[in-house]
Length: 120
Image: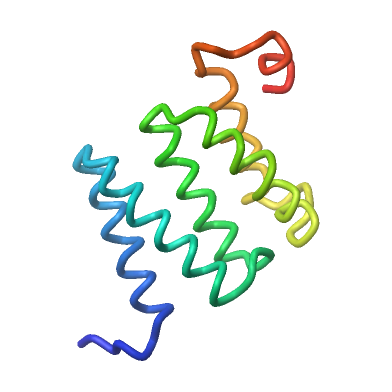
């Protein structure tokens, strides 16, 4: 049964669909969905809500899978990590996962610098 008035349920279903796309290797389609989901979560719950941060982490996963290193780094470092550290704490599992995703984006970028490697 579908409840169109429950936007969180719709976003959860779309997140599941994005995960299915990733599992099938359809990463570009997953990226489109994850961008939309993250934007909607920001509008509904604000940037410091755990659901929004988790949606951003999923977006970074898609960016890393598509080797969009600069965008993954920018979103992780500049937008998500500061908010996650402030609202969830530095030792929260989601904050730690975002640190790992940032390190991945820095390390695997073929245009990385020495400073990027030190940060990773």
